[in-house]
Length: 147
Length: 159
Image 1: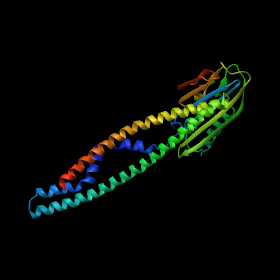
Image 2: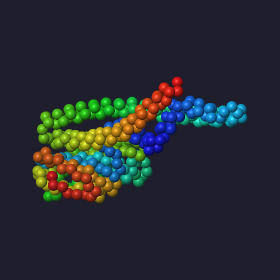
Image 3: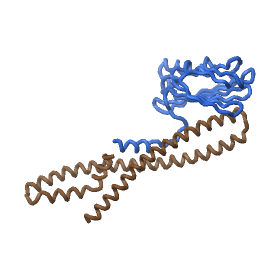
Image 4: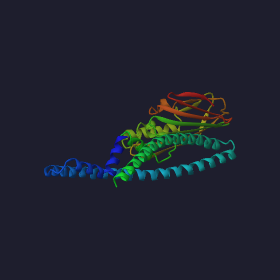
């Protein structure tokens, strides 16, 4: 849980930390130089972290889109499944109809297993999304105070 | 890392596949109609041949053709006790889906000398193909009832 928070914090609030440091060290020139050198080092780290964060968010967006496609594919499969079922009822009791019935039973079991697995994963993902939402709200309230 | 893991799981499963690819696992379906028995089999290549890749070595090729022959001729795989059955049609295909992944789909229809209802079917897939560790079995009987079981041993079942 902490990893993504740290990542986000670095991504969205780097300017806040810089302001605080500056205020604590008074007017000593040597101290300023040391601070500036540290800021530069920090900035390099921030830039590297930003890159990682952006790559991660790009990846998440791409995969969410793919997941949306998979859901619509699943919906098509459900329609086909229902059509097969209807056909089966009309086909009677031939060996071919029984073959179809066995395939439908397996398909249905796979669908049920896959669906339940995805709903479980979805629940976990939404918990993460909810944490992100809270974090965003908190950051927005900080921004309101600072500007 | 704990946080990122659910993301990886949910976003990577974008294919609603039919059947899980689990090495050692096999799906076996049987249906009957009067004197006919239809047997359908599905498993990862690893479960059947002991490897998932296309047969390259001489040894792989021998294993491959032995398995194909044993299915085509029903060599010690299935037997109906007290009934004489002949192969009406038989097919075994292998689809290579990755570097070390393949799926075997096979089907055989037996024509027997009498109605098969109530006759015991002997299944010896685990003994014959040592890569199979577990069978998920379904039988659709003449009356429409379905029997299903998961087993790690060869077994007999009344049709």
